[in-house]
Length: 112
Image (tube, rainbow, N blue to C red; front, side, top):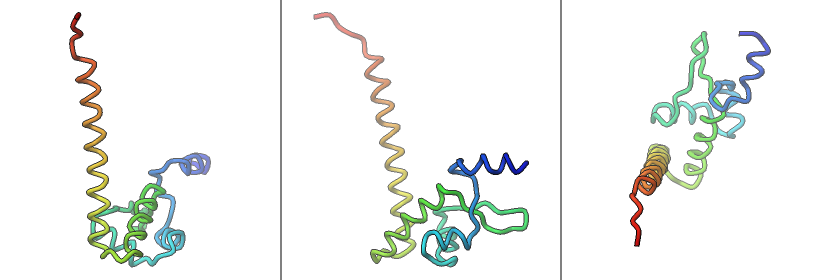
């Protein structure tokens, strides 16, 4: 991969552009907090060739949501579960809306 390719990937939300230290700094939290999110399986950072954790912008947004809940007094494990369940609910609602649209377009029209 060339330097130009790497630069172009910075617009990719899933590109693991941030080291653990930089991610913690951006979120205003500790590296231990990020490790705890990984242990709770909320986010799974990619690993560099040297084994260092690397985070994407998408993962940082999820970590920021967890941090907000923890800052409000929610235990970290509960915060992770809340976010996971919220995301699952959102996905289920999206799928249900898709099924409704499909069912509505498949209904035969009746003449009155």
